Length: 182
Ligand SMILES: Cc1cc2nc3c(=O)[nH]c(=O)nc-3n(C[C@H](O)[C@H](O)[C@H](O)COP(=O)(O)O)c2cc1C
Image (cartoon, rainbow, N blue to C red; front, top):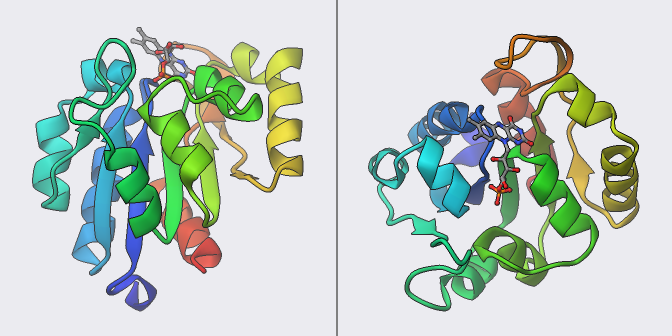
């Protein structure tokens, strides 16, 4: 955990059911001395309150509105300049598709386009979604483009199925972030 002291981590949260786990991760990283700034898609704000992430990180949260854009303006560019690493937890199938196609239709995808450092995507979804050819293609494209796409774990998922699609445990995510911090 020593590695995180003074480091600048941008945590992007998208609209998967595992969004609540991003709160515990934010808390752990902030407690370890990292500066953590959170960004949320509009869907993520329906699943987890921005105020929770704001309180855990001690920084205002940049959240997309219904049109996808940030409420105030150019924070995504400021955050892209500030962050040393961008971590998307959880990363939806929708966001994988946006990023694989270079789309900047909302605050998280625009931030990703503007971001110069390493980008770690942590997908979590229903096992059938994860196996869909379109999702496999997007993952392959993203890896080819230099994104770090973390393999989801196998086990019971929130949707009541069993298979590959679970967000890895917090300790594992912390290890991966430490490994990829520049
Ligand atoms: C309750 C609920 C849970 C969801 N969980 C997931 C999920 O775990 N993974 C996923 O890829 N999509 C999930 N979705 C679908 C996404 O929310 C949907 O694709 C949305 O457009 C994603 O938007 P975003 O990527 O901009 O956050 C869920 C939707 C709902 C309503």
